[in-house]
Image 1 (cartoon, protein in one colour):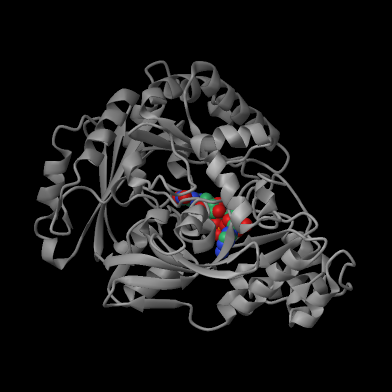
Image 2 (tube, helix red, strand yellow; image 1 turned 90 degrees about the vertical axis):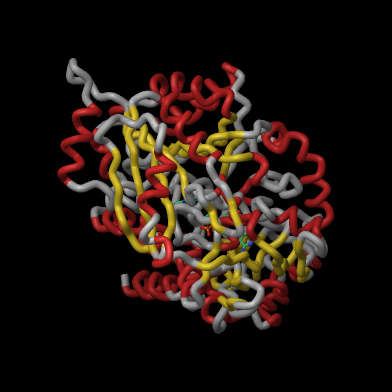
Length: 521
Ligand code: FAD
């Protein structure tokens, strides 16, 4: 018991647990002479932690875990695999907040990227050029705090900030700001990457651009991000955070699209909203999921229940349009007027508009409260059979009808369901990330959680949703994709597949990196 407790504590601190096992013979023995010996752990408890992730749906055991204390350690590890006659697979692991083993390396080596935290300050703001250089292992909450110390902030976010920069840039990084600034991958100037050949390359849109665009949404296939230069702008102080409730999906989406179209940028000042999302309340219990727990008061509950219940006592789906507008001392006097203008003509249910006035940090970090509450109740560390889709605008009503009103079993649905629009032209088509081929598409997140032994039902439901989309011809893309076969990956990347393969040959010809994505392995 003591060994397990010590190992867990060491793990949390990002330090290796002393190995109780010798180095496996299948790994090159020269690893020990590369100054990696005391940074590699073969301890079974450490290996178990690296065999699981936030999803708790799959397990895959590595042979070792590396706790790097420098960029050089990672380069040495990758080079050692690349130059070996029997290369071993390597997965960079940020927080392991993937849900299907994407940061695992079966029989390979997992790199605990967070261990780089122990090697000095890796968040450096440039006040003159408005950017922050951050280590790939850094959490977005720490990037936010580092930037705010200088009165600055990144522009594009994820809803939840306890994710690493390397992990989200490998996917895209989306939230309610994406309609305005694009995903996080569109807000990066430069990166240091260790490729699958064990070479360090600095890249940007103009320098080694093939690697730069490959890595953006590249699912960890081309290199390990050890530094990213993120765009900053002056930070606001406060936020008007508003939710409006609807019971008609077409009115809800019409208003969402109307609001994202109102972003008039005049001399750097955005006259539109800064954040637009939306979610579903399948029944009254969704008032209290981890994305809502900090928002409604008990008095609000009573009002909402009336909308959620039909005359014959059944429950209605409620659609919640969620927006935010940032402000500071200079705009404090006009913010309410600006919002009134932006909201004129919207058709939410009268009386069901709720406003909160919060600090910028509290708004961005809104999900944390829900996480801590669920953790206390033992409901955070449970299986998460999530499904994230990008649905083209042309298919979103059919999706509502067939999935929200059809396939989803309301009685077994738990966890947030998000629906919000974005513009395709805010995504750089040269990046690896893929989105539907329509100007407006919706991010739909079915962020379900389950008990330890009953997640298969939700997995089956997810499969049914995918089959439904295919049957009715909705040309969706998966976000945080997961596929079993090469043909499915080819379909996923579509016109980008050939380039994706070429980039793999160029930057990771021995298919060493991120095997847990199951694209090339
Ligand atoms: P990991 O799961 O550790 O890794 C993900 C992939 O990236 C793996 O393939 C891994 O090998 C690779 N990787 C990790 N670090 C690096 C690196 N430095 N260089 C290269 N490759 C690397 N996503 C959104 O876009 N928006 C959201 O609002 C959002 N909210 C979320 C909320 C919660 C509670 C959770 C659990 C996830 C959420 N996600 C969201 C999904 C999240 O962005 C992805 O799961 C992301 O991969 C998690 O980051 P991570 O640091 O844990 O990465």
